[in-house]
Image (cartoon, rainbow, N blue to C red; front, side, top):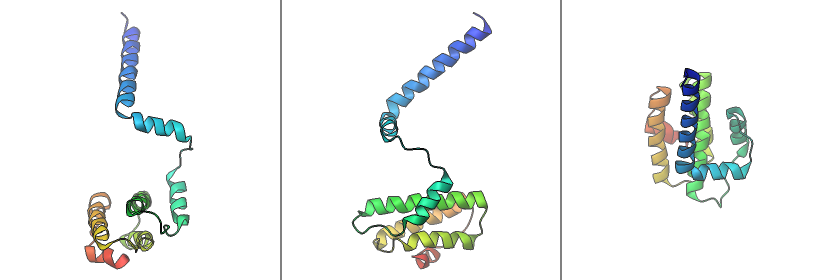
Length: 137
């Protein structure tokens, strides 16, 4: 067996292994991605869509609203990391997103505030207090 044949065999074996892992553990995601046929959106397009989305509709359940808010906040964090924004700019962007979700119950707001404090510290290396976040609502 030559080196070329060995590399080819290892490549085929690796491909088969990763195919098995994808089918075994990510079957649901694969089915969904094959069904939807939506083009891949870039971060800039997603952020623009989130900016134009406006206030959430009143008939959405709280889980969907929280999920939507978290997606919008992820886009803010991506933009902050990419554009190296200052803390005041970050707070302004986060505040704009939070204002659209004023109607969430206080316990959910508190959980989101704790999550934001953690993410500010972990992802952005910025310190923020719960009071600063509560003012943004």
